[in-house]
Length: 174
Image (tube, rainbow, N blue to C red; front, side, top):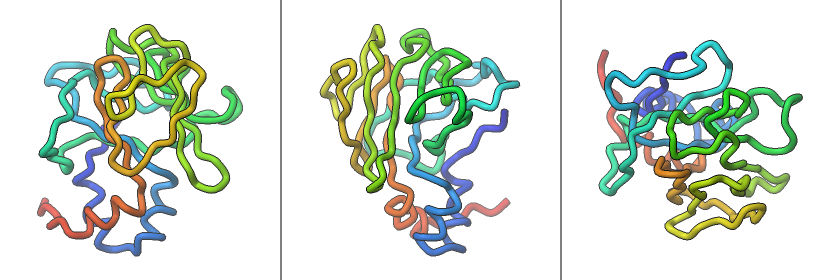
């Protein structure tokens, strides 16, 4: 599976309005540091997105080098509401880390556009900005919130607000 880096979104942010950018992406994003060198994706033949095992989301963030995924259903017929994240290949987003439970957390977008995360009874917990989320409890995510699943640190981005940041970056030349 091809990894996507935030730097690849910069030219798109320069070409599109914030609304068009958000529509093209299809939803909000989570981003975090790329995989450590030599770590292979598990389940590369599946349609789920795989996020690496490298912890360490710290400020200042080199956002352009981070891997990202859009929070949308990979297989809508297989799971209930929301995007599931976990170690299992049955998750919408597969996170390759021993600190991640098979079905670790769920992210849900409501009809008004608000985004919520809930823990699915994981062994190592789910945190939003350092506060643990109780299993079954939903916590609203805001743009740039830190989300920690086990030891994997990610940051939540609203696509329209991320457009504002990316459109100010200089695209890299290939």
